[in-house]
Image (cartoon, rainbow, N blue to C red; front, side):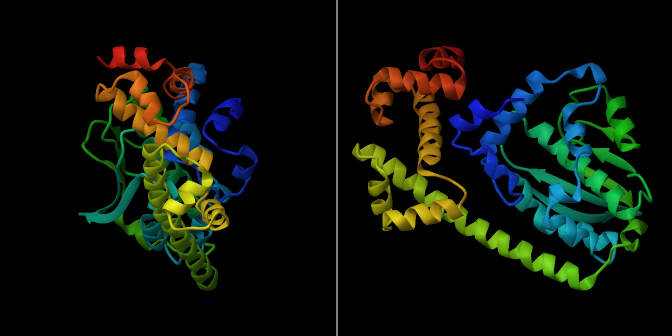
Length: 314
């Protein structure tokens, strides 16, 4: 796929994604995955989610991978996963529990993106692929559960996971033999594990600070749009920052003013269109000098003009 146009429209700089620590907004991930599904050649029978999960390597998981593989046991690695995976995924919480003779890792997803089922399947497939790698493929899972409806024949999922795969189960979960939690990992190294955990914690703290900045920035952008004066200086002033401070903190948070303004406008446009606000008023509220500029933005965001989007919704 050529992502250059999509990335540019979302304010994503593709070369920066070479850094494993870089992050992009989940709506960008959703757009990319939906485009990938449309472009996918399904002749090989393998769902895209399983292809993504099967491509997981320690490099892809970065610090979390090295902290996990250097843990003492598989159980320790899974606990790390539950602690830090929400940071990596951005849309879910994870929990390890014991049910009789089984250990169960559940993924509780939050959000309403169209690609969310695909992302959930890819996450669980990635867990299994990485688990096989760090344990030397000692065992397959006992069962996989998904809360959503299957997108492909069940047999294709079972061929990947090598176990029963059940859909519409009310939860997303991986079942393994509880005794496997005590399996010793060949690459266990307490010093490396400690260092990687500390680095992961530092990243999460930086991420949390960035999230707080983004929330404040979005509020400032909305206020400036309402006032009719939207510049870097006005947004920075609304946040009680100097422009240079704003640029530095935005860079740390992995965003830019251009990308943030576009995201806020898109969110507000959807809200106003749903609420029945006249199109000319929406254009003005979003700070566009001409109605045509708002129309072009809607085509870029939603694939259709604002009038068509509203008609389709009706």
